[in-house]
Each structure stands twice: as C-alpha cells, then as structure tokens.
Length: 200
Image (tube, rainbow, N blue to C red; front, side, top):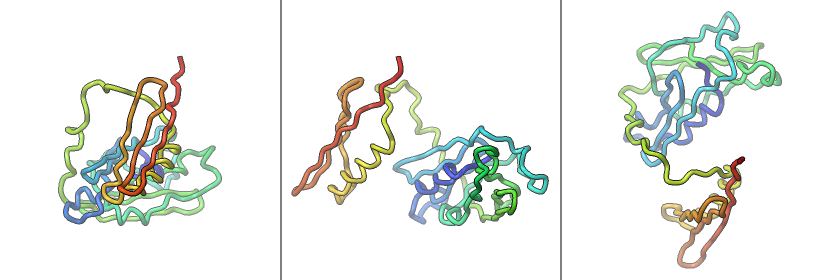
C-alpha cells in the first residue's frame, strides 16, 4: 500500500483542538487515510496506479500492519519527493510505510536520487469508529458538480456569515441549477452552479 500527496492532505480536516488527540491526527490503514474533526470527515483511498514491489531494493515497504494515527501537525513536515518522472514511474508520487514500532511509524519516499525518510511518533488510543456514522441507505438525491467551481463560490459566500460560515443549499431537480444562499443583516449573497450532466 502506497500513499500519495492527496492522502496526506487529509491532515487539513483533522481536529485543531488538543482535547482529543486521536482526532487531531490522521488515521493510516492499509486501504486509506482518514481524518475528522467531529463535524466533517474525509477518507482517501490508497492509489492503485503503482506496485510497492517496484520500489528500490534499499526501501522495504511494509505490506501488513495495524492502523495507526500520526498527529496532523507532525505530518505537515513530510513532503513526497518531487520529480519529473512521475508520469512514467507512478511509485515516485507515493510514500510507503517502512517501519512501525509501538510508538512510531516511518514514512519513506524517493525520487530515485535521494530518499526522504521520516519517523513520526504515533498517537496512543483508538480512533473513533467512524464507519458507524456512515449512511447505509440509498441516497435521496445524487448528482455531480465541478468541485473547483463550488469551492470558489463557497469561499466568497462564507465571508458573509461571520458565525458558522453558513450557506444554504437548494436543489430543484435533475439538471437544474443548484442555488447557494448566504448573508448577514447588512448584505446577502446568492450563487448558482450547474450540475454536470450525466452521460446517457
């Protein structure tokens, strides 16, 4: 199992509070990285476009391990090596777990010229059972939108609400615009974004 830069970005969702150290970190499993702050949660699966067997002989990735938590603040220090060869050698975009002790975990990446290896202290305790809050029924509505467009609109609209950054989302039906509303006592904002049409 390998982890790319998107897996590591899960750290942005980890809790900023030190009250619960378990959720102030990123959970690493064999299949994904997971982070939550109790209000939102993200799970990023490990990439499938590579084989840990292709790593250089001097890097020994672990194939089996128990899930562990790395503090998000510590994980910020780890950067996957940048190289121009990533399009032809996917493993260069990824890091692997090379060592685990009862109190540490080591992440390793390489650009074939150098090896970036960093040991992290892991968090004691168990990660919350996040799977129990996942919906198990079929969704009432499902549609696709451009994430970049949505992010830009939300970034603007949330500036109108200094409290909970509230934006009301209104869905009118298949292939209809999705409306976003926000505001305060002095100013309001509205935006629409079109869903991506599904291929017939």
